[in-house]
Image 1 (spheres, rainbow, N blue to C red):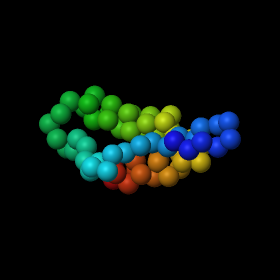
Image 2 (cartoon, rainbow, N blue to C red):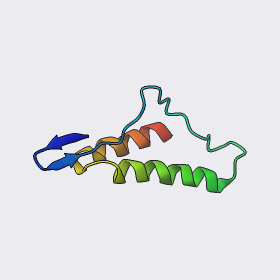
Image 3 (cartoon, one colour):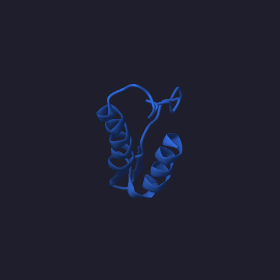
Image 4 (tube, rainbow, N blue to C red):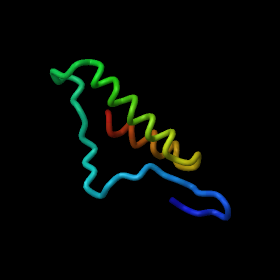
Length: 66
């Protein structure tokens, strides 16, 4: 969180222990779990960050999932 005058600028926080590992698409988990994982990552990248950080966070999600 960054305070800029009367406005707060937020970015998606990831713990230092964040590994970037998620369910493998080819695993034997239900498809809805895999789709929901992607949905939640994109949701966090867009909704929890200010506009100035969105592209960086979306790229992070893309790089993590590819």
